[in-house]
Image (cartoon, rainbow over all chains, first blue to last red):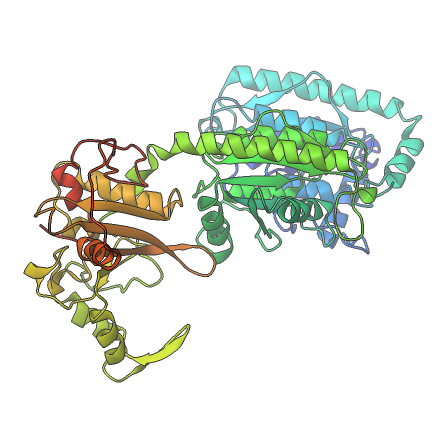
Length: 209
Length: 405
């Protein structure tokens, strides 16, 4: 928990897209800048990761191990997901599969889900699926409950300085981020079962009878 | 019925692949299932569109020519595996082969859930507008505890499970038939009679509608000719020998490729004596150049080719009216051609006068013809399934592909 030293939380922000022009990346870049007084946000790209594939020796690519370590050392994770076919992109799904294959950086980690889409729905269905995915036994993240940040019409959402234009949306994001900071703090108090949970995730295997 | 099976796992050992292979084997009397491999599909990335690559094109072709798809999904982290989602992303970006395609979802998992949550996610994914597949409702087939489900031959051990699987597959066959019937009505519009799309054998850079296309195109590809040998699948002939052979076949043959380009006819008679009139200058023409754009001609041509291309029928036949019915009964046949992998390769069209054959038969067997008062004439079998008692429309004649009147 490096962030604790100077009192400021340190978050890993996962860009859920491998597209060069991603409004989800833009959203996270905006959050990093906009909340720089409140938290240290570090963007993580998943573009270099191959498609998840099981192997006998449970091989996990070094890129995934590096990301896992950064997540382990953070106070929480922010994910920005686009929506492809009512769901999260395969590249994000694949990254989460690597990040729960014999390594378990997400267990009990506070997660804030955000998402941007070109249309008006703002990746609502992808976010709903992402919640269920993060809730699975080998990820077992602590997703901030009762919160949703859906950025619709994302191509028109930012001004020329890469700031969100709509004051109401900014207010909503400010409120959610404040909640997330509190959620992270509360979460730190709720670690009694953490050791057990980690162990359970490690022992859990879809392969077992 | 032809189905494509996709196992949603790229793991070396996949029970979902085993399940599909069992379905393909055990129900071979009900359906023809071809299990496809998705191991080499690259990661979807908008910035690196590989839709035109062989892997996606092959998947697309196979799905297009199938009557339906069975997807067997494992469950990873409460959802479908990334590898399966990845394939669907490619198939909903620049190409949309799953659009309107009947799909059945099955799934196997190590635990008791049998991929239940992955199947629900998959349903949502397949319903997305870019995918727009039509998923069989209900009929959930969840195979839990899969490690103990198969015997060492890859057969499901539990008879009740096999029986239930059979019921769901029979339901899917009925469902797919109905869905495909709905889809049939409009897809012929997509046929491009101007042959602009091209195919891997289309000779580029030469105007296909030019009168001297044959010479120029042959020159461009340095075509075999004269005494050059051509190796066929069951013979070796020179080009001249092939010509002697084809010209003496007593029916008129026409070759139209999958790009709707008229490539060949067996030129033995002068144009005016042919049952379906062709001229040497027409060779190479796109189909819209060899049919008159009047009435419903183009529509009928499109319907015939679409029905053959999409496998709705293998053969379309139609009589050509006119002339003296006492002397002639000319039939046109349009037969779909396929390569070894069952990809549509075009139309083999032949025209033949059946009257001499029937006369020969009657003479040899000492019989004569009597009118059947209840007979219904089938003006155009295959593409449109209706029968009519009326005389075929004049336009029907003109629908014969690659003929000019």
